[in-house]
Length: 102
Image (cartoon, rainbow, N blue to C red; front, side):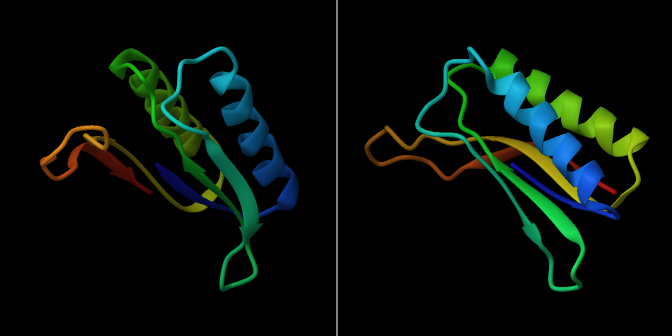
């Protein structure tokens, strides 16, 4: 999951497309959600919610977003990776494995 806030619409568009390109050909559990909008302060935002079928793909997207956050002028950003067991009866709660906030 990621919530990113940019200073310009073009940087927001760029990041949204980078994430969408990274998802091509990946095995996902359900549909991926990569949506753009405006935050309460009027700044452009990108929200990402993806459930991967394997941890390797999850780690790759997490690392990509974390790296981009360090290089792009994100005004506010948060990306996390967590394990959830939506398809297990009597499922345990989701566990956040790692989170990066800038």
